[in-house]
Amino acid sequence: MSIIERLQKYMVHRNLNANKITVDAGLSVGLIGRAIKNDSGLNSETIEKILVTYTDLNPEWFVSGNGEMIRSNNQTINSNGSTNNVNSNVNGNIGGNLNISHSEFSGMIDLQKGYQAHQEQLADRLKTSQDQLTDCMRQVTLLIELLNR
Image (cartoon, rainbow, N blue to C red; front, side, top):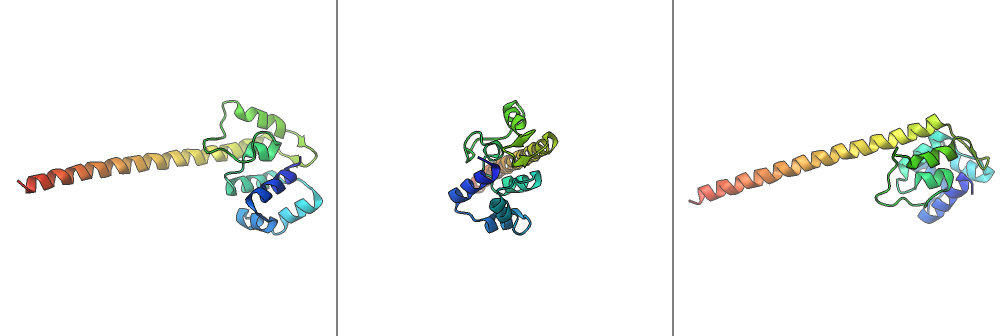
């Protein structure tokens, strides 16, 4: 199955059309429609935009056909070896429809890592805010007790 066939399968699953993907991912007008009509591949920039827009789409499945189409809630892209299979599949030509260099794919992985780091920073900020709020509530409770004496 080519990448464009996998995209079509995802479109059916999500009830999307080519225009919706083009608009949502900020792609050139008609790009997806032409790729489907011509059964052609997608360049790395297009793949990246689609993956950033549709976060439930499993990048490994989308690029190589390996794994499940939909990403599980706890699935992440990491560099502990799990991406090696993807990289080895993406270094060349997949079914004549996709050429993506190792450096381009590495860039996509780095982008994902950046998003994960940002998410961790936001989680840390939220925890700090929650701790501060808990401390303030404790202080208010103590002040109320002092006033009631």
